[in-house]
Image 1 (cartoon, helix red, strand yellow):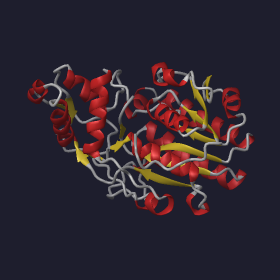
Image 2 (image 1 turned 135 degrees about the vertical axis):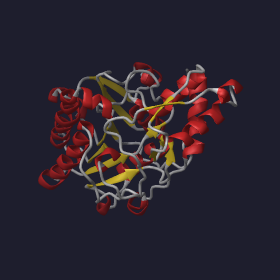
Image 3 (image 1 turned 60 degrees about the horizontal axis):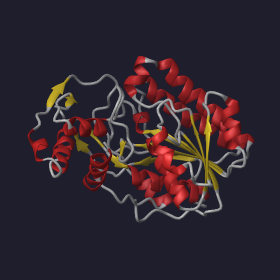
Image 4 (image 1 turned 30 degrees about the vertical axis):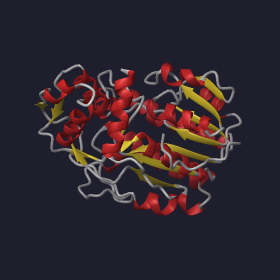
Length: 331
């Protein structure tokens, strides 16, 4: 766990939507460790019961099984809540290309339901997972919050619409909102299975089985890979700030360095071969570029540093070491 996490007052009751998912379950765990009361809303479409199984015996933890597409479920989950960390969404660019309707129902209609429920419950602040995909076809690097391009996928459209709705709710209803544009988050509890698995857990699992990972393209595409504890830190800072200039806006959540896919696989092989030397000899294969992918992604984190005091502790190497150890112990 991150040793520099900001302290959030333990008297708060916090709702984490998608709380059984990868990011959500890490947030639930940290908030409970801090003494907060936590409600988790999840329909287990992509979340996993095993992610929250250790939390169910905690008297300060409550699970609400429900769907953000149902306004009644959202209202039920928001009762008595001080803050909301909205993580529930259908991620993945390819998933949204294959099924844009469901992505829109969850990510747009579900998001609007949560905003309405948050407004009606008079929560103090609504912090939500935005996405680096919002930068779309913008060529500028590093990515700065107020310069975006046109979206390149249905998923990217849904996450941009979230930002527009949050802005309107803050201006029209006085609901404090903070959007966090996540950049390629990775770490413990991220699912390596399924058609839409993220690249790091998928490659880790393949390498552990001595199977050849397939890189989309020539491996030169680069990402600002961001370890989970940096993301947890940013969520806590978004809840905890009393700086009025720091709310009703969006932030990049990243480390501020980019790593190409060839470098990434090299690091994974290096760290995994400490557990199994044969992994060093696994061959890497290459396939076509993936539709909707942005070639390069790199975040400026100056705004988060200046307004929220964000100070990411884990770079790609220290984060991957932690992630690889977790996968080795748990897969």
